[in-house]
Length: 174
Image (cartoon, rainbow, N blue to C red):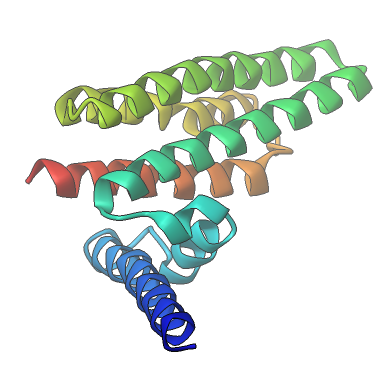
C-alpha cells in the first residue's frame, strides 16, 4: 500500500512540475512579448496531451511548433472551403495567396521542429520567422484590394501559436 502512495505522490509531483513548466514559460514569454496572451499560451499547451509530459522548454518549443503546424493545416482547410464557395475570381486569387502562404508555413514549421529537436536553434528561429509571414501575407492580399479578410480569426490564432514557438526558441538561444 505504501508503494501505491509513493507512486501517487511522484505522479502528482511530475504533473505539477510539468504544469509549472508550461505556466512559467508562458508567463516569461507573455511578459516579454506583449502580443502573446498568457491565457492563450497556457490553454494551447493544455489542449495538447503531450504538454503534460514536457520535461523542459525545448520540448515545449517542439510542441508549440506542432500546435502552430496544426493551426496552419486547419487554416488551410478553411481556405480551401472558402475557395470552393467563392464565385468572385479576384477574391479567389486573394485566397490563393493565403493558401500558398500557409503551404510554405507548414513546410517551414516542419523544418523548424526538426531544427529544434537537433538543437539548431538559430535555424529554428529562421524557419519560425519565415512561417510567421503566412498570416500577414494573407491579410495584406485582402488589404491591398480594400477587401475584408475572411480569415481574421484563423490568422490571429495562427499568429499567436507561431509567435509562441518562436519566443520559446529565442529564449533557448539566449
